[in-house]
Length: 372
Ligand SMILES: [Zn+2]
Image 1 (cartoon, rainbow, N blue to C red):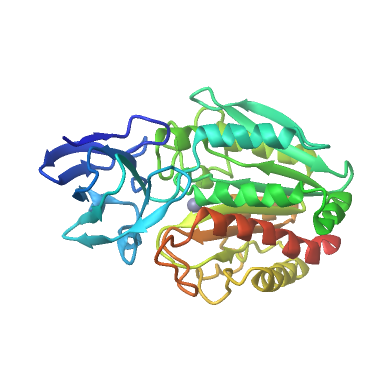
Image 2 (cartoon, rainbow, N blue to C red):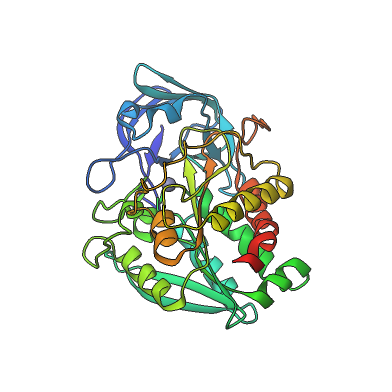
């Protein structure tokens, strides 16, 4: 007898029917009903069976192209996540998997759940010189947490992640980045801490994360379209962070995301911000060059088309912070799929690789920090 559940932190997947070894589910839309793609559910009782599960409303996904050349993530211990054969046919996402455990979890990408988020904050605040500041509350009553550390009068560097809550790879990256930055035996980290003041928001959208959303907060706001005019009613997460940014100033801002379609790691800059000096645009190039060397999983060939000067969408964090502060602002994108330049059918793009890319950000930042 199969039992299917998504009633847990960041769960998403409503059971429609069980028929023999086949489970049919639908993805529950985000608040606001405009987006869906994140799924995360478990199946019990399938050990030794050839399980087939089907997401019947996959064609309604925000990015149906994300299902092409995609393998769903599975785990028996919720630590190691591996990919399982997945196809997108006739508007449905279908997976066939010979199950080896009593319970198996499936997800769009390796989850980064609320408990792990709290553990990360707890670990970080115990490191020397780290402050954990609560900026206020989300609409569901969760804390908007900010970690700050480094030189009091250092260059203000902001790193934020997971405005889009289904992009759990963003917080995996932050974990690697924080672990290196706060490693007292890492000389590069130590030299950055002497020159910079870091402000890190590991999760910009804790409500959406816990609710199992792809893209929005508790009331259906896409936070990365709320930076021009954030409000405490619709986008308190952005309102609180932008308000704090106004106090600290910003010279560097990295906004970490995941991309459903492109099987690459890449950066999108603030090309469309007309007021941004050419010197800052050149620093962005320098940052990318060093990052590519420090972590070959990052590449510069594939990415979004660059916006023409003067055509920046100022509702997005990267453009708003570039315009508002004249900062070197960048959006870092990682794949849900695999890194097509370094294919790894077993795990695809994975939490360990996210963390390594996070650690490599320090090499790139070190190359531009003194010019900021
Ligand atoms: Zn995103």
